Length: 182
Image (cartoon, rainbow, N blue to C red; front, side, top):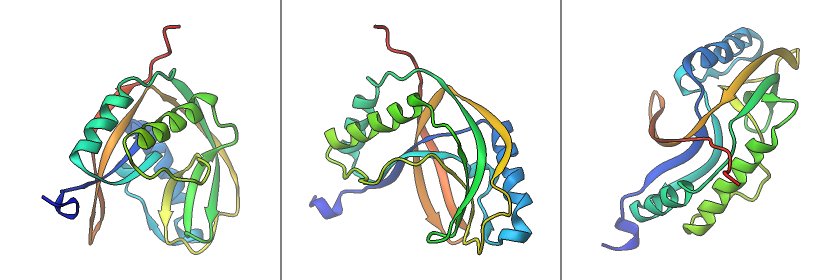
C-alpha cells in the first residue's frame, strides 16, 4: 500500500470536561447567542484542544500512544474567567486569565510526542481556549465572567469526523494526569 493509500484518522489531544462543566460553559454560549450570532458548539463537543494532530496513520498513532504513556504531569485547576472573540476565525471562546504551568507542560509534552512520531508540530504558541460559537459576527459586550473552576485530572485522544451537520468527536483513549514520582 502506498503512503497515499494508508488510512488516516483525524485526531487531536484534548482536555474533555465532565458534563456539569460543559453545561456551565454552554450557558455562556447561549447567553451570547443574540448579541454575537453564529452557531453554538454542541454542549457535548466543548473541549480544550491541547494539540491538533491532523491525519494520523495507524503506526503514528501507536507511536503517539506509546510516547504519551510516559508523560507525567500533575492534575491541575483551570479557572475559566474570560470570554472573548477572534474576528479572523469568527470564534467566541472561553479562557483563563492565568494559565497553569501544568497545562503548558502538558501541551509541550504532547507537541514533543508529535515530533518524535513524525507529525508536523504547530509553530504558533499554545493558547488556552474553548470554542463556544463559530461564525459569530461579533464578540460579547463583556470580557470577564463568573469563574468556572475545572479540575483537570485526565486528557484524551479524540477522533474527529466532519459531517454536513457538524463535527462528530469520539474519545478513543484517556490518560490520567499524574505527578512525577521524582
